[in-house]
Structure formats: structure tokens, C-alpha cells
Length: 291
Ligand code: ADP
Ligand code: ZN
Image (tube, rainbow, N blue to C red; front, side, top):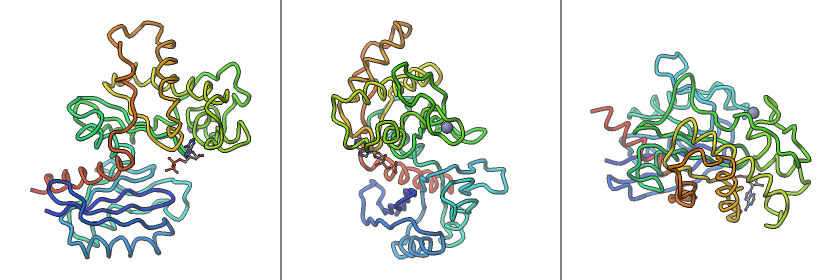
């Protein structure tokens, strides 16, 4: 078997082909332009490689309801040329192989659960903190979908009393997690890119407070055995101990069995390929569903 994987991002598309052992045989990266420009090159890559199944981990939002007429579409994305685009149906039509689509973060959660930081565990949450905030949830062996798919980036948080921008910048909810803690919110609040802020800047205390609220909410709802934090902002490694300490403080001793937050809140083991490896695992699922 040859498995194809596409990690579809707002700025770039990463494509790979792997064998049964998930060893990568070919890999390519393309800038994300319009579907008319980008799709033919991606289809040609997978066709030339002769893939037997394709897994796609994509930016969203996505329609993942199999009984919907627009199943497999990218829906109302701010990336306008991809709005209401039939991403999975177009690949199915062109390649005539089984395809599975999921969110980029659900794919990343799958990779971490099967071969990464949460290997062997039943539940984990993968959160990326970058241009936006997104989360994938792996629960009792399944990726969570439902009414749509988890949109953990838009959970509502209590503002930090010292936050100079407590109202947040999400166009839908203002002070949700993404509106307060994604890279652009940090930049707007401090007038400088998150990358440029030194480790001792007050920005990180506030950031850790928001990400700790998210961790507490995740622990109380999904009961994950690992919370895996990735994305550009988590390039600030000093945030990890700050988030763990703040999570412990906010828990207030409530989750008594949770003792070792060093082991609970961790970076991705598959970095920087969690989404791509997860897409390969989705391709494997597509092939298995087909037999
Ligand atoms: P995307 O979310 O677009 O896939 P990233 O995960 O790289 O891409 O996130 C980009 C965001 O992360 C930007 O807002 C950028 O300022 C921020 N960022 C990237 N690298 C760092 C870093 N080392 N420290 C802090 N912030 C970073
Ligand atoms: Zn929001």
C-alpha cells in the first residue's frame, strides 16, 4: 500500500507519500493559492505517486457530517477562494481512491495518540496556538465530531485583571481563547510580534493564565490523559512550566489524582509533523474502511 497525506494549511500545503510502515517516500510543499491554481498540482503529485488512499488534515471549518450534502467541504473559511469548496469530493473524483478528511488538529491529535506523546492512552487533546487557536480531541479511541467538530479556540475565558487588552480581538466573540491568546492577539496587545517578546516580559504571565484556563476547561470536560500544546507561540518553551503552575493554581486542588503536570501538559512528540503523520494515519483508516 502507498498512503498519501495532505496537510492543508492557510499558507502552505504539505503533501507526502508513505509505505505501510509510514516511512515517508516523497514529500512536497506548495503555497496555498486559489483552488484553481493549487488543486491540479496536488492531484498530479498524488497521481504520479500512485497512492492507494488519501488522508487530509485541513484548516476549517469543515463539513464532516457523512449525511450532509456538503460532506467533505471546507465551509465558511475566511480564506475566501476556499469557502464552500468540495475539497474531499474533488480528490475522490480525480484520484478514485478512498479518502478521509478531518481537521488539521484532529489529525495531529491522532498522530500524537497513536505514535506520539499520548501513545497507548485513551484520551488526549492537541491544541495549536499560532495564527489561530485550534484543538483536536481524541476520545476513547475516536476523533471527536458531532454537531460539527471541536472549536476549542473559541471557548470563552475570564479576562486577566492586568490584561491591557481584556476585550480580545475575535471578530465573533472578542475575548474568546483565540481572541485573547493567539499570536495576533499577543501582537495587538503589546505592539510587537510574539516572537520578539523576551522571556521575562509580562506578556507571558497573561498568556500562561489564558492557556491554563483552557487546560482546566479541557480537563473538566474531556478528561484528557495528555494535553499537547503546539503551534508557533509554544516555540516559547518557558511557557510550559508557567502554564503547568498556573493550571495547578486554578485547579485549586480539585483534581486530586492529577499530580504530575509535567507529564500531563507536554509539547508534541511528532513535532513539526503531527498533522502530516496524522493525515497518513487517516489514509490508513480510509484504506481499512474500504476493504
Ligand atoms: P499557523 O498558525 O499560521 O499555522 P504558526 O503555528 O507558526 O502558524 O503560528 C504563527 C503565529 O505564531 C504568529 O502569530 C507568530 O507571531 C507566532 N510565533 C511564531 N513563532 C513564535 C515564537 N518562537 N514565539 C512566539 N510566537 C511565535
Ligand atoms: Zn472566537
